[in-house]
Length: 188
Image (cartoon, rainbow, N blue to C red; front, side, top):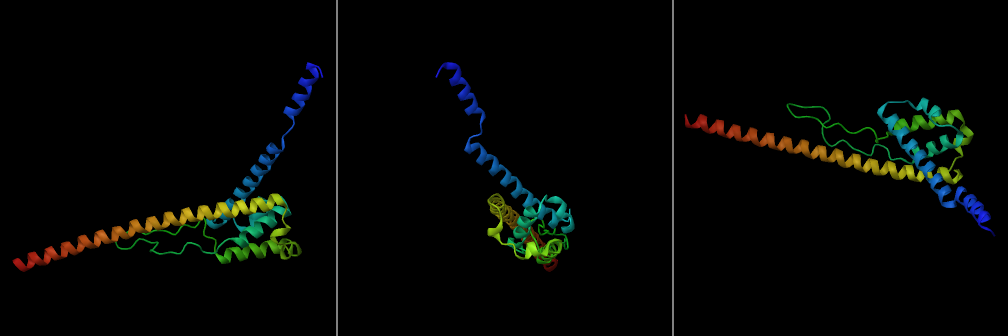
């Protein structure tokens, strides 16, 4: 081969996508769709969108099916309230984070709504029925959702610890003031 032919062959090879580039592109699409799944559930939990608007958020039946299975796989009410949410006396409350706390009622409403759209498709749908890209997105979405849920739960528990320490500090100060007042009254 002469030098010109080598340049043409190498430029054609360089311009073609390698299998690694194609896999990276597919992984990026799976990750983007996984974010879309997580953000859809988060938006529903925060009341930004209703479950009726979900069908416009996803483009086709496969995406809706993946979302349907995603919602069915999520834990219900994963963050239990362990401290009053509303302020009491002069203490602040600690609200339970709602973004990653899907309740059973909402999940059932989503399921009923999607089954109403196409009952035969959703009633027989299983995880192994998804295409590989949707299956990967489902797995990535579950992993992301659980990671975000753990961070949210940890943050909530830290906020509760801070609020409880405030209660203990204020209670100790009030007890000291009461003892000092009783001592002063007893001395006089």
